[in-house]
Length: 255
Image 1 (cartoon, rainbow, N blue to C red):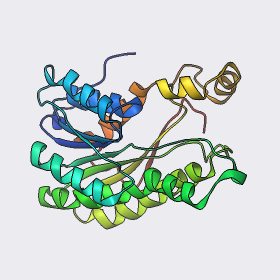
Image 2: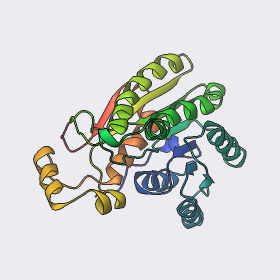
Image 3: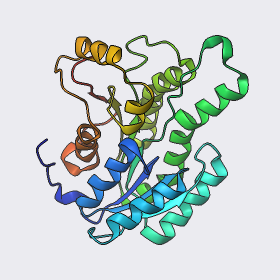
Image 4: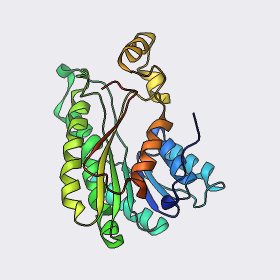
């Protein structure tokens, strides 16, 4: 894949990434650190998060800052954002990337599982946006990117709590774009297709699903985390200054 574009406006910009320790989130942390941004990230995977921050510290303009927290608990989320702000400074970019696409049958879904899934897949997006709103208002603008999914667009079964949450993400984006726009804050949804992360390859991708992907995508090439990061960089940078309340689909043409 070609090298990612350079965005001068991202240098020294405060960027907060949820779910940044592994998968797409890890690539986001790497990509924004490479732009010279002040990157902070939150994840439940403490060992992976600390290892990523340590690995990037020596090669980044600003050493990425990590906080381990359960994003599904609002008080833990707020405490993590506050701690990272103390170490990294205010945030004018938020990437709401954290999610859990654990498969679950309708018959086996309990109220407790449903609530836990909603908490990580959409509830945290609202409360993280709420937590960084004062920073963005003080700065006179900012960019929030909520991460969606094409799964509900494809009428994918087998994980109703996840697909319902991801469909609701686009509604949340449009509402926040209106409420935050008066402060110069842009809010968009980045909608990935089936991204070939280590987790997906280990748990869900089979020879049969590779055939399904090849039939669905117009471009029959693996969709990689770097493709998602490239769009995230654009949406965070000043180059997308008048883009808000929109869905940016990166899926190889499947949806």
